[in-house]
Structures are given as structure tokens and as C-alpha cells.
Amino acid sequence: MRRSTTLSSDASRANGSTTVKDYIRACSATDDLSAIAAAAASRGGLLDDRVRSVAWPKLLGSDVLPTDPPNVMLDWRSLPKHKDEDQVRLDVNRSFIYYPKNESEQQLDRRKGDLSDVITEVLRRHPMLCYFQGFHDIVQVILLVLGKELAISAVTHLALLRIRDFMLPSLSPSLAHLGLLPAILYSVDAKLCQHLSGTQPFFALAATLTLYAHEIEDYGAIARLFDFLLAEDAVVSVYVFAIIILSRKEELFEISADEPEMLHFTLSKLPKPLDVEDMIARAQKLVLEHPPEQLPFSAWNKISAYSVLKTTRGLAKPQTLIEGEAFFAKQVTQLDRDRLRQKIRLAIWRYRKPAGGVGLAVLIGLVSIWIQKGGVEGTHFNAFRKIWAVLRLLGP
Image (tube, rainbow, N blue to C red):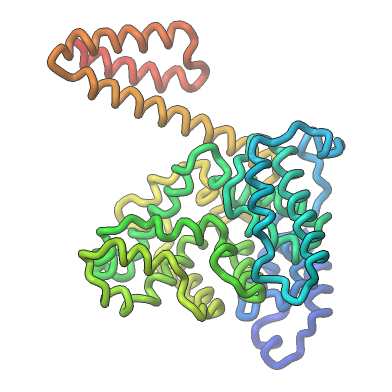
């Protein structure tokens, strides 16, 4: 990697010695991602969209020719329709509500057309991805910054490598992100954590799922926050929400712990105005003081090894799309295995009495037949053989 160019410091920007042209030139000339990331995370971020259009693709690893996907040379319109395209169409029709401002209906329609094309192309080229409502909020920010052509590759890399957990065929990996929130809060303020213990952290889902693009209505603020989020590990998004909670401590203590619905309602809405710069600075400090590996309740150990929370942790360079697809496949396998375990547990519970011996014997027989017929293969076989062994021990 070239490291000949050093991006400007906060001090030089503060005294006006750094111009947008300086930043564009510096970002274009360097492959030192740590320097670009440091600039993106520093106060003021990447200054404006001209700098972002150079820096964001580098941070996402989308600034290189897309040699990974086998169908990259095909016209995406000729590819099979993705199962979620009807929902995409509905969401695109609701896009560009708050920004950009002062554009005609015709201009907004063109932007919606571009947004639809970008999302649809990404989904058709990577049909394993599952669209979620709010994905369009993320993509519209990237589209406004990068333009249609650059946005396609950037969104592809984002989907497979940064927010992959949100595009799996189950919501459980997304909810696992939220499971870190109580542990983070407990590390900082055990009393506040206890106060909120009556409500599940689902209040943070809409914000974290959309990288806050669904919640923040000011374009400058969300673009600035994206500077930070794209420059950091994926887990930092959860720490950002923890900071939002901690900043509302007094307000939350005014609501009784016996009113979990009111606490949930309050926390599901971001405070206005939102000081993005302060939030970023505090989130950086929080991650350093309470890194995910040191959180209580073994919270980090409960996160899948294939989750973006772990696969983006401490990366020196962006991953490839092939790596992203491999992680995706491993996560799907893991989800299938978890679903089977749950079914077996339910079956054991169902047949536990009064004819538990007979019922469990039937269940053991069914599992045995299923395994013998090739219901599992490869590395799965050992896992399910262990489950079968446990069932035999529980049997008559």
C-alpha cells in the first residue's frame, strides 16, 4: 500500500488551512485506509460530498473493479427477478421525503428511478440477500453522495460486508446486535441498566438496522454520521445507540420502571436536535473504554463468529465480495442448525409425559431415520449425531 500522503489533522482544518480540494487530492492519492478512516472519524468528518465520493468507496472496498461476482458482465435486467422486488417498489415510492430539498417532482422521480435500479441490481446479482424495509433509506444516502454508477458497487459491498446480518433470511442475527446494549449500559451505568431492564432493546432496531438513516432527517447530519460508521467496525453502530440512551439518563429516570411501554416509546424516538459530533466523539471513547470483548454477561461470546460484528472487527483492509458470500452461507447454515435444535427441544418437551417413554422413543427413531437418509452432511453430521446421542440418553 502507498502511504506517501497524510490526511490533514483536526488542527489544520480548524484554522482553515485545509480545503476541500486538499482533501480530495489526499484521499485520491493514498491507499492508507487508516488515514482515511481517521479523517472520517475526526471532528467534522470528510467535509463534504466531493470528498466522500472519493473516500467512501475506498472505505467500503468498492473502488476496485468488481471481479468477484460471476454474473458481473451480464445486464442485470436480464437476470431473474428477486423475490422482494414488490416491497422495494413500495419503499422507493416513499423515499426522498426529507432530502434533497428544493427539487421538482420530475427530479425526485428520476432519483427514485435510480434508487430502484441500484437496489434491484444489487438484489438480482446477489439473490441470496433478503431485502428489509429501511434498506432503501441507507441506499438513498449513498446514492446522493456517490451517484448511480458508484453507488451500485458501494451498496453491494455494504450489503455483503457491513450489514450482512440484516439481509439474512431471519431477524435473529439483527436482534443479536441489540443484545449488546444491556451489557454496554451495565458497564457504564448499572443503575440505568436496571431501570431499563423491564423493556427489551427492540426500541433500537429501526435506528441500528438502517444505520440511523431512517431516523435522522437532516442530510448533512446523516452523511456526517455515515463518515464515521463506514470508517469504523460494524459494532460501533450499537455503541452509538448506547450513547443516545446514556445522554437521556435524566429523562429516562423520570419515567417509572413499572412503565416499560412508555420507556420503549421514548427510546424508540431519537432526541431532537441530535448533536452528531458529540455523539460520535462519545461513542469513540465508549468503545475504547469498554470494548466488546470485555463486556459483561459473556455478551460478545453470544455473537456468531460469522456476524459482521466480528468479521469487521479490527480489519486492516476491506474484505472481498467472495468472502462476504462465504460468511453469508455459513450464517445461513448456522441459522438452519439453530432452528433444528429448537424443533428438537420442542419435540422433547411435547413428548415428556405421561407416555414420555413411548413418545421419546418415536422421536429418537425419527431423528435416526432422518440422519441415515442424509438429512445432514459434512460438518453438520457430527453436530446432529451429538443431538441424536443426547436423545438416546433421554430415551427409555
